Image 1 (cartoon, rainbow over the protein chains, first blue to last red):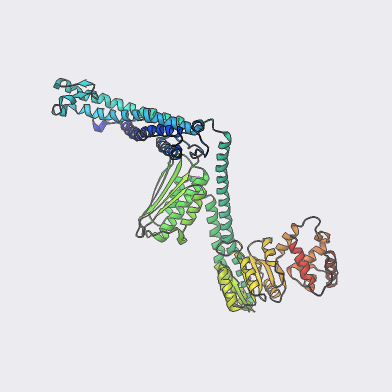
Image 2 (cartoon, each protein chain N blue to C red):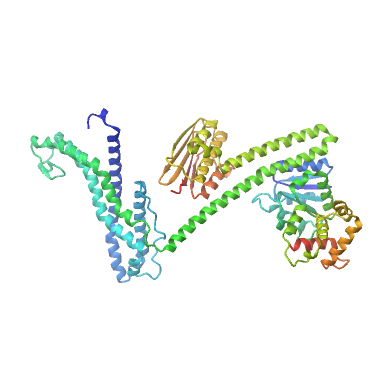
Amino acid sequence: MGSANTVSADERRMLREALRATFYNAYGAAIGLLALYTVPVLLIAALLCAVRIGRPTARPLLRWVRRLSEFERGRLRRIGYQIESPYHDPDPGPEWTLRSLAADPDVRRELSWLFLHATWGLILGLVALQIPVTAVHDATYPLWWYAVGPAEQRLLNGVVEARTWGTAVIGPVVGAAVFALWLIGAPKLLDLQARPGRNLLGPDPDTDLSERVARLTATRAAALDAHAVELRRIERALHDGAQNRIVGVAVLVGAARREVHRDPGRADEILARAQDAVEQSLAELRAVVRSILPPVLENRGLEGALSALASDCAVPCEVTVEVPARCPASVETTAYFAVAESLTNVAKHSGASRAEIEVRLHGGRLHVRVTDDGRGGADPAGGSGLAGIARRVEAHDGDVAIDSPVGGPTEIRVELPCGS
Amino acid sequence: MRIVIAEDDTLLREGLGLVLRGEGFDVVASTGGPEEFLAAVAEHRPDVAVVDVRMPPTHTDEGIKAAVEARRAHPELAVLVLSAYVEESFATDLLAAGAERVGYLLKERVGRVDTFVEALQRVAEGGTAIDPEVVAQLFAQRRAGDPLERLTPREKEVLSVMAEGLGNAAIAKRLFITENAVHKHIRNIFFKLDLAPDDQTDRRVAAVLRYLESA
């Protein structure tokens, strides 16, 4: 490996990967431990059900199994496997029998996973934890072996006895070898541990096609709904904004024409107001167009568009965008709009000296975060753009969190599903 | 003439006030919402109310509801409703309680000050003022077998101008025909729509109503 200065980027990356893998292996072992305790409880409940007194336990137990499998789905998501939940909640129905439960593919698959993860998954997790511990133990052996009792004077996880200096100095060699093994093997162990979950926790490939259709129909309806919301927003923006302004102009011009002969000075005054109103309506039209699809987004992508927003902002603004691929245009537009509105608020109300924009694509969702060090107290009900942000984000099935205590700082977080 | 305005857009509210005051009307109150408007009508007892259709809180048809409500509470009140676009259900809602002292115009007509003032005066004197755009839309939706289908194109034209609320002389001027011809067309219209001479109802109003109701 060489000295610390010459550790290459590759080796550092391997170390990081191995640490991460071991962490998630340990997390998996924790879920495995819960699963291990669940197995006997399920067996007892099944016995009690066979004599009919255990029936009320079925629903909560199935829910608990679902909860455990959701933990596992979450873990798998974080190590890069997107696993969809089964279509319906675990509900045995009023007339269930042990046989009908066993015939339900979702239940069967989840219970199979539970059993595999309680055994295989738990063991793999413990092994993955043990290897780095052994590596450190053996590598440091010569430093402390003489201080412990003869029963603990062993190497390689207790397999080899080492009770003399001659054998103790083998420790660092063995330790280095085990460490190398860990570096290479940890990601593979994680992969093995994830396998039952990947195979069993997704929707059953044989699931009734009609349920798939139902789910697709629901998501499609949601998409159409979002579309309708968007159209309504545009209609409202045109109607109550630009159109009203232009009608106002027509009225003012009418009034001015009547005054031209009676009082030219007054007519001029009215015409000046009409001109103001035309300019306002142009600004509003531009804003509506921008809100439909900001041209800058089309030309320069999300990162370029947000940088442009930041440089236009009166408050100094730092932008971090980590989005490797382009998201759907509607998602990018919504993210852009949320940042634009947030920055408008920062500039107008916060009195902040600096702001920060962070956008990341993570687990199929676009995470947007806008923070400032201003006086806080932003209120979505207060007529600021916050309500508008919420409306648009919700139309995309996203989430908005606004944290703005009086006295600051303000943090606005938006999460948008990116439809991968 | 004393007028109350209900319009939530500030620019338009001021513009309306400007036009009406410029023409010598007495604008006694300018309001921005339906409740405020009803309170102002109850307090000032104006001759005419000018009401915008879209007002808070939902910006859909609050203005129509407020206008209908005001007409019920104060039958002598003339109401002129302004709308950013033509919606014939608004017109029928508004005319359900009779076509007297009612107007329904597109907002931009206010800019043509003399026609607007004319319509306002007509409504205040007990007449009707329906926007030509509304009338055109109603004609476009005529169904087959409708008694109105029996009218000749010229008679339809006369009826639609009549629906705007114009009198015989004004109709003649608008359509470039003699008053005598107008008279003849109107007689034919009454006949084809089965409106027999009767002292109880104004046949002109009845014809317009039949025309609007069958939309």
